[in-house]
Image (cartoon, rainbow, N blue to C red):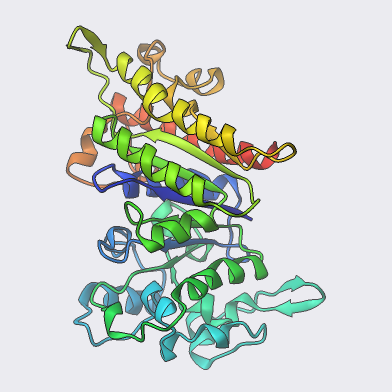
Length: 368
């Protein structure tokens, strides 16, 4: 099972938009299906950006319509399955009930209405009858899939106030149940859209995922902030689970400009290498043991795409030298999933190429 965390040192990096566009190609690469769905978690419980975006999913059935209506029209009194309720162990989302492989509720069967089974260690685990999954929102059609159940979304409750719940509850342990259940039921993957900075949920998501995609604008603030936040995580990491950290500049302008006697965007590549990549590699080198190397810092997104991706470009774009994901004019007004729209503009064609490169980098980590 593959796991990915989309992270940014602060807001404004375009992280969530990059996440949904990555998912469009990722679900196809990992062959996500209703039997082995991709689990998508909005961990940004303060901003809830992914939850706002996926409210616009076209419902696949009446039950999904009801769930989406609750998200859109919640006045703070409606109760529905959300990350907030998992964290707080709320009785209407009691994770202890979900650990039972035979967990079943009438509501779950009505929502999912199928009888899919998965054999694990000789047990028949019916993913459709487990409310942990049945109460999530099927959003596969948002990503252009025929089967909405191939991507299951765990939203934030926008009106929910965590501070009203018992502070003694182990929210971190509750959060870990998401990955535990996904592995038990052989899901194809888990994707976390993290909050910014060093908030608890950002740290927990990074610890849970094997791939961390660090989205940043190529500015001084982002370079230094990304370095310090990731460096702090690496230095405090106490597990031997291998991770790859992909440095992913986002919304990079490719209009050539001269500033301070340097040509941009070409010069920004040097800044990113010197200010972020090389310094992080130095930290990881110092932490290497004689027989184990935990962190891999990947800088492929700082350079042009490999030949197999470049070969698919229109002739007029063959010589474009890309750094990160290019700025997309459309995203200044709409956070679209480009795979679902007709893309004829150069910036959109090149952005799709880079989302595919991100998918390749994540896939490559599992093949090495």
